[in-house]
Length: 269
Image 1 (cartoon, rainbow, N blue to C red):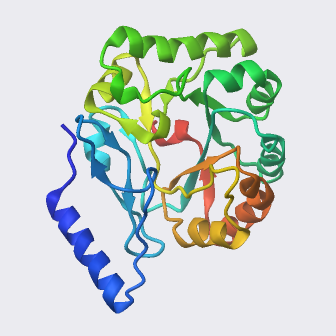
Image 2 (image 1 turned 30 degrees about the horizontal axis):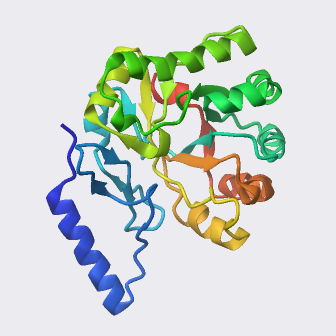
């Protein structure tokens, strides 16, 4: 079973205490996408802890532990490669601009989509595929998957999305899965693996999904430039106005820092 390392928790608390009282400036994350904790029902929220600027974070589980379930949260930490991914539960009017920036920089990303996105925006799904991006499985209904314990229900969430994607594109969906809201359990990871899926978490994200509280350009760059690291799997939301406005400049700045961009397909080969 994947468990949080108690020593890691203690060390993190000590770092936070020192940072709070002595101005250590350690970056600690405080929301559901970025906080480490064990859920009472045995499931977990994927979370990260950053301590050194420009260095990979720690996660709820190590890369080696996750590989037992064909799951990943980071690539090769010795190579300055970024794996750019987007989550989208609905179209908010910003995906086209993001796709424009990706095309300009010749960057291929992975879009984890839900059923609503596929049924309401098939034209954008087709554009993603035509421009060399990967469309992947974020489940049909975007539920808390830790509440799904049986294979039949789990399979339905996964395969309903597969069917819509094939209807739209005529192609089979790549078997990449991201748990909605980062909520997962060992049972979920096991079922995904049994269905032939590889599960992808992330090693960098920021609070970009509130429509009425979008981060400023400066706030976005502070996180996305300050915490970028070799092998990063970056999670952004294509529903974000800020992301659409900064994408061209963000990709340029990452390139100026010496980073190149890989595909998740390359990471798992």
